[in-house]
Length: 344
Ligand SMILES: *Cc1c(COP(=O)(O)O)cnc(C)c1O
Image (cartoon, rainbow, N blue to C red; front, side, top):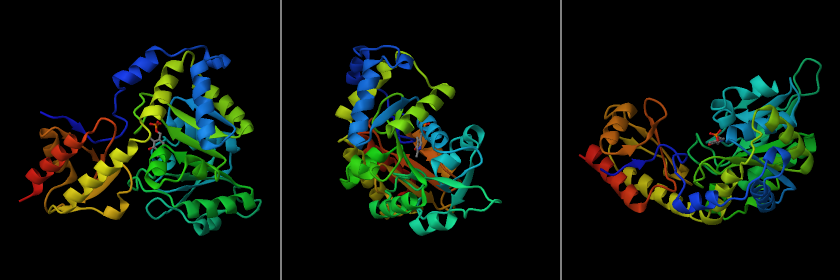
């Protein structure tokens, strides 16, 4: 039986070519700053994003959290969107490790407007926490891989600069936004003081994320990376996988987007499936199942019997994600499984 794993774009396994690149990586002690492959990756990504410096980190969560710590002091407030990764999937680390308070805003499909951000900024007042940082997410994971409009980013960025606030981007899937829109990574990054990007999602590397910003920010982030236990030694083995991914797996994200679209359109016609096709913009497909027909659990179980795997995000909500290890034939197979289960 075919095995089509659409639960997440983190399930990819390194290709034989990527493993070759890892095998041949030149390495050194990166805590001493002596791993040439890590240094190469950091310079490469800093240049791609048009920033002064970059820092390789073990995970996206660590990248976001050391950025938050580097931008803030304990007791300060950061403005974040309710469905963001930082609020929902990082164990409350901003409170635990940076000691900051979250000011949570309800976005529309993960998008906060400049006006919403402005309204959340605290006045200077001896009673109130001081706002220091705004975090955006692009593409937005929980909203279904939606793309943050560049004009809104520019407005928020201008506002933040005028008010002396820092702006951080959780760009775990900024690669996807850039490939889908044709807007360069540099164009996105110019509006932010720091950007975090993941190699371990659709790009298909086994481990690793990166943070970019100016030299002074990266120096502080480096300090927190060590404090959080993220100083690694001959980690060029992993950086080599990330370089290989950038050189060979970036453009092909367009294939993932095309496949997600095809899948979404095909299932949108089936009874019991509710899906907003406008929100299928990159490699994530979110849809609801009509509980009169089936619960999300029941559908996921039935799909699993056919070798198709998806993620349960609530009693009615299911997520499917395309990635490097999902082919056109896999998507056709998943569509056929849906037709068999719901088509009559
Ligand atoms: C995956 C992801 C992260 C980081 O996740 P890790 O599993 O810690 O690498 C951060 N933000 C978003 C939006 C993500 O999807």
